[in-house]
Image (cartoon, rainbow, N blue to C red; front, top):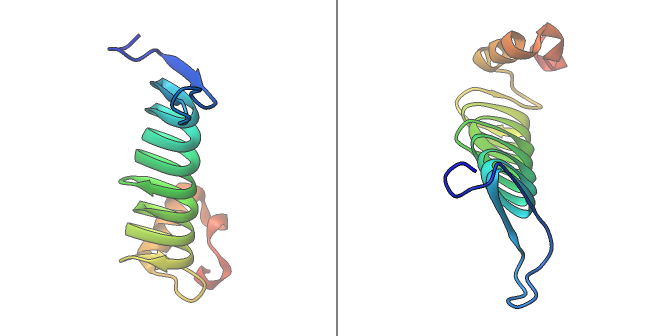
Length: 130
């Protein structure tokens, strides 16, 4: 236990009385709805999250991912956003990218290319950046 949260909480299904999804709350939370430092679920909230709709402070990965830090997903919004439709506050890399430094199908900004090269290696650059 850390505070009132267990270290790991796995909670799936629907509450039989309220007919609402059960919520997993823990340092590591796994469930349909998950809230925790590391949260994994259909709907996940926390520091680092993975889910269908993922809202994470440091990192978010999912179909729709929203985060202050690093976000990866079909639709990604964050400081560094990578995905299909991306909105990045620092860098945006994707099919349609919006932000101050972007890489998408038509543009390749030097700042975003340097970021990719630094973190993922020179082979990670798309053809329009080489």
